[in-house]
Length: 96
Image (cartoon, rainbow, N blue to C red; front, side, top):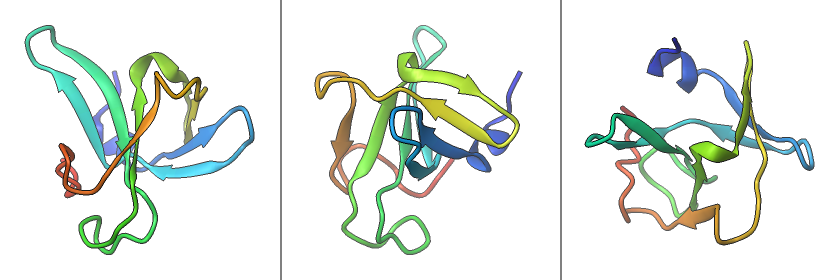
């Protein structure tokens, strides 16, 4: 079992290029089925996770390869499966 607070402290890294995307800022949870649908990594240029114009990375749970001690490894695939979420469009951007 992994706690939300533990996930927030981990860096999200793409396995295709080793790029650090940031840390998890929010989760998209399907309450009806009790599943996490995606993780949301706030875009750059944010202050306190709220102010700024960076786009959020929305990464479907199916693209998470491994949750390690310090990092979450993700395999970003085609544009149809991972996308950016403009600020203020569905993400609370304030964390959990």
